[in-house]
Image 1 (cartoon, rainbow, N blue to C red):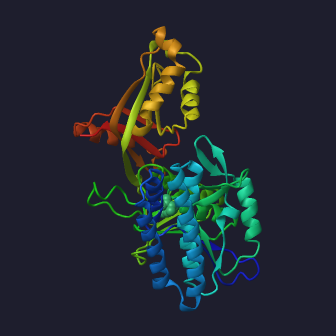
Image 2: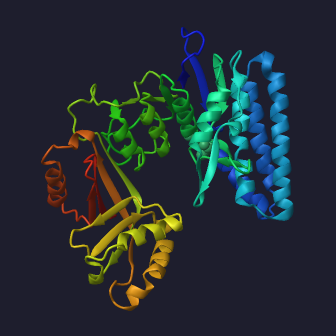
Length: 424
Ligand code: ASP
Ligand code: MG
């Protein structure tokens, strides 16, 4: 990401946020699990992780920096190996230890990347990306994080390197992280705190696609999206950037460019406030889908006109850390259907059945029902707003093709129409 230089605004200064070497986060987690299960083979996996990093140093670090980088990498790998040993001996892997282990991926890669560019200054994001607990997750503590980023980058070096993904808890100082894929988010949080000129996400695909190319063979890269469209698409199926990434840049109106590291000449996807530009005139920008859908239905004639039923549904689910991505309730109020991930379904049914035990006993609400292994499909486009006929065309097309819609939802923002279907 590029940040405005405070003193001489003539050359672009760059803050490079790095993720771990490809596959390393998964390997760290699997090595930790092996060690915790008492399998001495974890040592072989640790050796593979070490070898991979030393090889990367040989392949990419500038000759004059190699000694320093090698020394630092050895220290970090030594610490990591001691932590694995501890996990192996006590056969216990707490979430806190797991978070500490997984942080080494970015700590190692950032040291290596900082050794590939003359004069690059390495920062430790654990000092300024701060989190607070929220249900079972850690979320960014924005006031503290923004303050610290502005302090650490009061003077912005020409080239800075920052490990993505990792953070620390504001209150305890424990190492935390922003969730899998969170390096994109680190970059966006920093861009926003510093009012950067632009945020670039360099990934391994050309950008957002009109549909999943594994399903739709003539899907193509979308050149221009609005923030809202990008948020709709990445929150939903399109695994191009980590979903929370867009919001901080939207908030500050910082343009975002998604680029393919392996195909840099491709224009990628440009994300900004207004849709004017390449895709102007296209009402639907993309179609995304997730197969992993379970529909939970809370239904009963005793719900009609009763105030507070939905509030209880959502409070109960939130308390158990269950995320709801689709809600549908008809105006008759006798059925509320919600879409959750299959893995959350049993817990959702259990906690809702407890919450409404009394009403279920009295027959006011039926037994809570779940229907698994469905797919949710969404069509996204900000210009759908006030354009009549889109829903008609959508449902007409589904009907003509014999596809039954189980539930559907459209928010009044009219930027997304989502519907749930069975998977063949
Ligand atoms: N290394 C982390 C992960 O694999 C974060 C990232 O790559 O963005 O999830
Ligand atoms: Mg990533």
